[in-house]
Picture 1 (cartoon, helix red, strand yellow):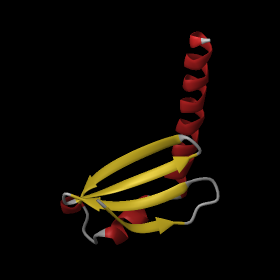
Picture 2 (picture 1 turned 90 degrees about the horizontal axis):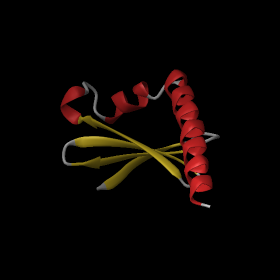
Picture 3 (picture 1 turned 180 degrees about the vertical axis):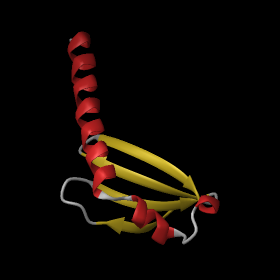
Picture 4 (picture 1 turned 120 degrees about the vertical axis):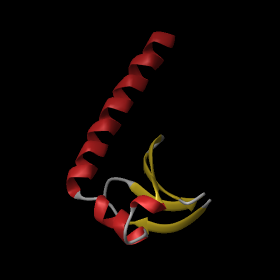
Length: 81
């Protein structure tokens, strides 16, 4: 697996990796991470197509999901303690 691009974003660390004919989109915020995989065969313009997929609407859903993940983890941790 190798990193082929990092995309600047004010709220997340966004990395594009390549492994086994797939692009892996890794988005991190603190201790949480979301990963999306897409086959190279499904994209017409290689990694440039990945950049096009990552629009503001997508980032908004990612932000919402991070909020939900953080809430889920906090609730789980509180049950433990």
